[in-house]
Amino acid sequence: MELFNSALGRNITFVRPAYFIISGLMGIPNIKYYYIFLFFVYIVSVLGNTAVMAIIYLDHNLRTPKYVAVFNLAFVDLFGSSALVPKVIDIFLLNQPNIPYSDCLTFLFFCYTCLCMQSFNLVALSYDRLVAIIFPLHYQVKVTHRFMLSLIGVFWAFVIIAILIAIGLITRLSVCGSVVINSYFCDHGQIYRLACNDHYPNYVLSCLYPVLMFWLPLVFILLSYLYIGFTLAKVATVQEGLKAFKTCTGHILLVAIYFIPLLITFTLMENIHPNARIINLSLTSVIPPMLNPIIYVLQTQEIKESLKRLLKIKRKLKITMAKSTIM
Image 1 (tube, rainbow, N blue to C red):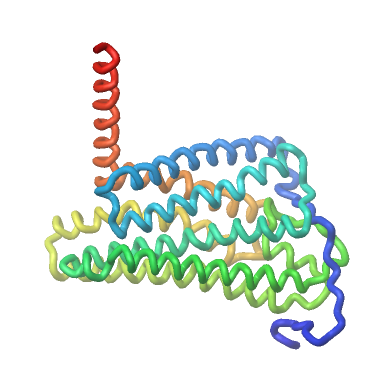
Image 2 (image 1 turned 180 degrees about the horizontal axis):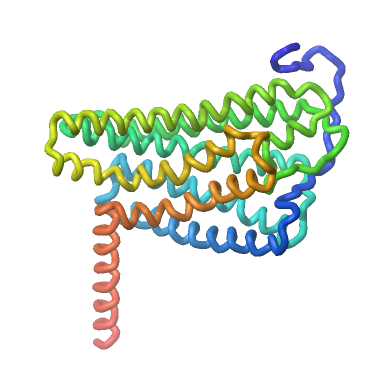
């Protein structure tokens, strides 16, 4: 069996359906209310992430490498939610379950790209915290704007190329029977299982990508925090250690909210009920983007102070304009 089932040099015709049908959650009464709930979560996510991006853009004090990563996280959350939720509403609330073949692959690309980029954004933020706490004197040398932009750029390139490879392998599959995708979006694992020809390369990627995109980033994050905790235990008092570790609480919450349900879904794979898989993955796709800005506003002192400054400036402008109008 050839690993990539190449058709180069052979006269092979691939059978591609005109469209796929997204099945969604099955056998659950009043399920439309769940999709309405996802829509309201999406609205909160859009407002929150737009606010975080605006605060970082408007406040020059937040033009630091750390907030380059935070801005990118907010952008990915906003972009990913906007790629997913409006289409889900169109499919299930407006009763448009048929999606053309090419549109389905495009849908898959944007959903998985944003889902994977969230993981690597958390890696960038954990590296920032690691250097800031362990090497505070070298922080401005080791973590520069150029370094952070390059790191995020490499992550984007890696994820985009990886997802394009997966999509390229899907285009080499023939779908001869059912065109029903047992998911709430164009899910890679559910699509390749519809194939009537050899889909072994797709199966290999479905096993490899969770390791590369989720497990390895999580291992790096956990090791970085173990190293931080071990170092602080040796060189700092309990009070100093807690104060330093407090700067990481927001990031730790983001990691837990994002990784726990995602790894449960991708580790169990076929062993999880389709409805449970859909609910787990859909909540993982919309809840972290909603909570991320809330956690950063509540847990990050710099953003809270920045928000106060911006509101103070806005009040002064209103007073100035009111005075000028009177005069």
